[in-house]
Image (cartoon, rainbow, N blue to C red; front, side):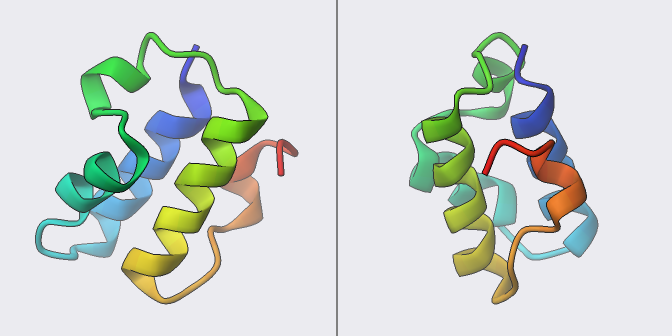
Length: 69
């Protein structure tokens, strides 16, 4: 559960954007610890992909989305 969401959290961390993971949690309503136990639903993944775009200025890499969006 939460494999895709956790992958996006890790990608934001790798980007090195100050406060990126905090912004991701605020924008999605799912904190990193909760993402580990939450299902990767299409709706949640869309929120994460949209937040990734807003935070980084780039589309979320398709390999992170697992074909969900």
